[in-house]
Image (cartoon, rainbow, N blue to C red; front, side, top):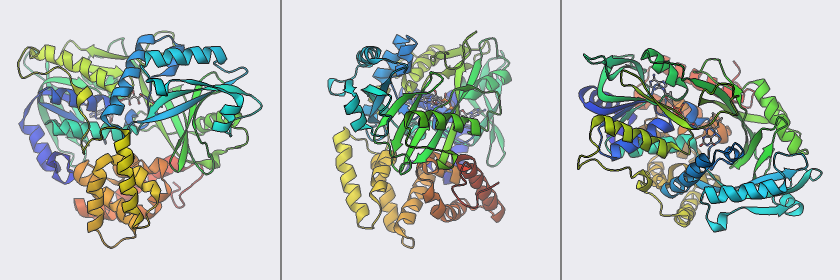
Length: 558
Ligand SMILES: Cc1cc2nc3c(=O)[nH]c(=O)nc-3n(C[C@H](O)[C@H](O)[C@H](O)COP(=O)(O)OP(=O)(O)OC[C@H]3O[C@@H](n4cnc5c(N)ncnc54)[C@H](O)[C@@H]3O)c2cc1C
């Protein structure tokens, strides 16, 4: 067990952060910060990372959860971006074949749709070439009959055919936490619920560390570091403001919402990328017990600490879906869960949020703060390499023997990596048989492998040791134990939203698990009765916000 990943070991982690002098402190535990921590630590730097809430609690748990080559960027002629992210997704798949899995995407062709037959065929061919897609996975053009066979819910009146192309899917929050854990295995010290409140400056006025607030104890302390990188996603400008370095180059935030329908209600067989009436495009993706639909793209000026789907967002997504899948007749009551996130985009004069490039950019302030924003989940590794190269330049360590070139394309994630998809399938069979002995639904075998890979073994070992509960409940509690001791889970929201995704894709399982989980957390952290009450309330609030469209879980009304 790595003690730096155990939430019960928080005081020791904090003491390490206070005592050491770091080469690099990263603010922000989303995918960008996590990627930087891994790149820098694996190349020999002394690294710390602070996250004000939970890892991935910002945009990095609220995406479409695709590691994609970005077909839409082709439409905007962002050739270099398509090429880079296309190559990157193959690398990330290799690093974690259980967590980043191949997903065929259907692009329906309709009479007045965004892409006609020839443009779809040509576009997907260029996409395959740019993204370096292997021959077996390259695009296929399908007739109307073939399309409807693959996805019978599409409208036979309007479908003329389709293109079938390759994407990869993942769980964004799990990807982030696995990268954080891998960074910790290389010596990085990463902690959640630790907010960067201000910067420290040396005698020449250069940034020399950060002032932090421990969000759990409210203690204040500083962390010293030669370089500070601000990877705070939508909060990047807030920190640049504190650093007095916010200039004309600034962020613009765009809100993106996803809604979840039970798979029974929207029994889609195949992921589909379809036209919305306003010439945008929307994904419908089946995932276990659910199908999710997204996303919206609207300029956002509200509270960035509290972003939720509203009625208009839901109407837009339901309206667009019903148009393409006409027999469904979805309505708001079918929405069992939802999430909303903010794209941190770099402002470009005269462009709407959907036109702005998703490219990343580094800003350097006169007093030495480095900030990085923009980009995609998919491109995290390259973003990290770029900024760590810059940090190495500033530290004048590039030519030291101990300093390595970036090799994160070779670093498989923690927990016993898989060689390839075949090995994942074999492992799945073993776990399925093991769970069958306890009458646990096959769904959980797939889920455990996708979320934890070979770390499933550690969870199942713990499961064997716990005796008193019904098997599915016991499995959930074994997962919670794992989260607390191996993944810095501090509360029920970390667990249900980001480590397990249950709030989105298995919301009914929370009903049974929430009370025992809260009680287990109370014991792990010696919570007072008052603290337990507050945590219960916080959990109810997030469940309500995600699912209030149909009050799916009784008793969670405001
Ligand atoms: C709707 C939507 C769909 C998307 N879909 C995809 C997709 O399918 N594929 C893809 O590749 N990309 C996608 N993206 C883009 C991708 O999700 C983002 O580019 C990425 O998650 C941004 O990560 P980040 O780490 O920069 O920001 P964040 O994930 O927001 O991380 C920043 C972190 O900094 C923390 N922080 C802020 N202030 C402080 C402070 N003072 N002290 C400590 N910590 C602080 C925050 O709490 C936060 O966790 C999507 C984005 C959206 C919004």
